[in-house]
Each structure stands twice: as structure tokens, then as C-alpha cells.
Length: 206
Image 1 (cartoon, rainbow, N blue to C red):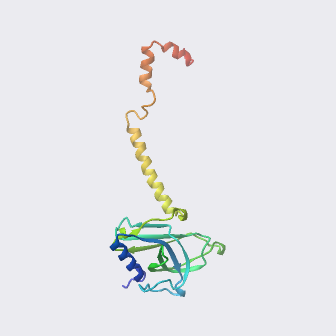
Image 2: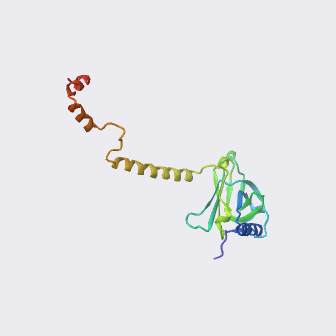
Image 3: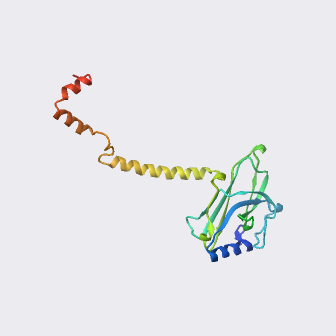
């Protein structure tokens, strides 16, 4: 069965990536654009320099190496619920010079606007296979990052796992609060000092 949806490096992107790998520099991917393909599902072409029908271009929200495959880079953009009113059929990645370095098509989806009565946050993700991920700068401007629910959930799980480990070590410790006087030791010292009667009196028990 022929693959219907796929992503590929453009000719310019492949040349830039090869040049970066050869010179020991990095290709800085900074933006993602989405388009409607001019009304039909387009087929990605390495000779492309732009999308067929670009509708929105903005900074990436996430760019990382796939944890399950070190030769894959995952680029992600989040379109807020207030933006939309168009179909998404194509995706483009752009470097810091504004050159489209990768292009993809995707399953057709309509991105509504909030005023249409069905606003939603839309995550657009492109997975790109490259020969050398070290030749790509995996850096995102933190001022444009919008956290998805999954991202927040992942972080909660990560923090919870850390705190659970800390609490387990705390509970298992013989004396987790060494900075405080231990009860058994305190009672022994009071008895040795002959102050039991005075302490009971101060506590209203004597």
C-alpha cells in the first residue's frame, strides 16, 4: 500500500543539513507553517520552496529528538483556539533564514475559530528522519511555548516520581529529622538530670 501521508526534506533543506554536518555547524529550525493545499491534498515535493496554500506560520513550540528513534526529529506547533477558520492539509518547517527545509502532507482537518462555536487547541506535529540530528539545533524560544495537557501531565508524572522517591527515602531513614531532638533521647536526658517532676509540673501533669 502506497504511503499517503509523509514528510521529506526539501532540496534546499537537504543541502543546508549536509552543509551543516560537513562544517560542524547546525541548522536552526525555528518556524512551522500550515496550509490548506489549495483545496486538495498535496503531495510533498522536494523541489518545493513554499506551501501550496499557506494559512499560518509561527514559531515552533517543541523541537526534540524522538526518544524512541535517535534518527528522528519531532517538531511541534500548537495553534490556540482563537486562531483558525481554515483546513490543514500541508505542513512546512522553516529555518532561521526563512527557507523551507522540510515539507509534509497530513490527514485533512479543519481548524475552527472560537467564534464559530467549536474552538479548540490544535497540535500539529511533524516527524522528520535525518542522517544526523546533531546537525540540527534543538532550541526553542521559551516565550512562545504553550503547554499542551499531555506535556503538563508528563511533567506531573515526572515530578510525582521524583517526590515519591524522596518520600520513600525519608520514611525508610532511621532518623530522617536528625536536626530535631529524638523523643527517646530527650526522655533519657530529662531522667538523668532529675527533672522529671519539674517537666510534669510544667506540662500540667504533676
